[in-house]
Image 1 (tube, rainbow, N blue to C red):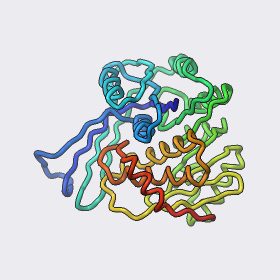
Image 2 (image 1 turned 135 degrees about the horizontal axis):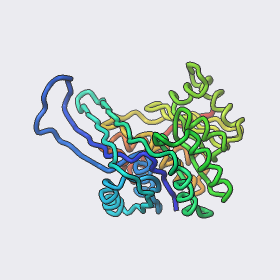
Image 3 (image 1 turned 90 degrees about the vertical axis):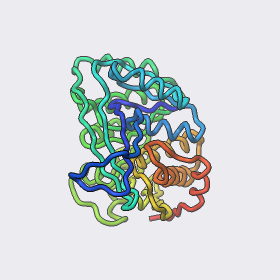
Length: 309
């Protein structure tokens, strides 16, 4: 089983327009609303690729029924620690003509710090050997920034593999627990090192610094330019084929889903990278976070260029 963390659930609303201009009124706009959050996005990719998967995390009581029904329809398992309130609502405005998107992400309600230890106990009850965990997203307001560090330590104690995809202090502190894989994007890497990082070799050198921390595999996502992947003495530039993107929301989550499925299937390092990049590309061709075509992924994998840096 693959578990995907959902610590900050959200309902994603997507509006699709030919073009968008601030201050105008638009009517009869095509829209789509989906229970989401990074964990759900990753889980949808994993399920689309044919693996058993479950989301696990925090769920405001007012939104629990909506999420559980949605996960059931997607054949995704769900284990939630209930809290008061309702899930935040995020809005994306996709402009078809310009091929760009505007994102408005809401802030979640602050949680009582006292429930953090109970929540970690809840997670530990679901930790089983031979499972894999994808830890994605930010930490809820009210919890301390070391939450991922504590969860990763608990997973490692039970010899459970995990991937971390977060930012800011949550990423910095989470990496101290040495997850098996980490996936920062370029902005997150720059924030971590406190400097502007320019050029492939500079990125690769900073990725090597993360390996030196004791993290076995490092994947640095570069948006439409693909990814730099490091493991041992290997440093690979994984370039995506050029496509006309329809919706880029969730491309990084799709990459994470491809990585963890490739890991689950014991793919070689190179093939794991191919699958991850292909998932990101496939996602960009479809509306809605978590939307890929598995047959398309296999075709795109053949077009992913891999070279040593």
